[in-house]
Amino acid sequence: MDITHIEHLGIAVKSIEASLPYYEGVLGLKCYNIEVVEDQKVKTAFFKVGQTKIELLEPTSEDSTIAKFIEKKGEGIHHIAFAVPSVQDALDEVASKGVQLIDKAPRAGAEGLSIAFLHPKSTCGVLTELCM
Ligand code: CO
Image (tube, rainbow, N blue to C red; front, top):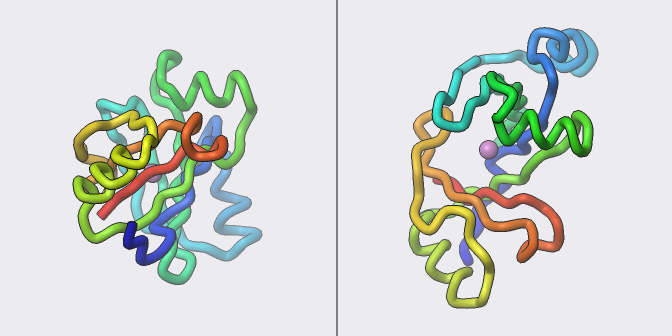
């Protein structure tokens, strides 16, 4: 696979508002976009760290996968997202190598990205997103 860089790290938080004093006030990052992704039942907040972004994920509903994640594991790193030139080509390649896919085809994510997730059972425990 032809990964160009880490596009973003997804971090689950209970509240974006309550997290801003740390990310902005302590780390000195600037939130440049807040966006609700309806079909994933999350509100996202973005910060740039060089070429990589931090994506805070706040659940907008109790049945959101992020709500379930926080319930089980608490707040913290939820996924890593690698940038690839073609999400579909990358999916086909990893599937041919036996990786279990959560998304068999790319779908729309925040920031107009095309995204797909690989199952953590096949990725050494790290929920992995491919995006472009
Ligand atoms: Co993501």
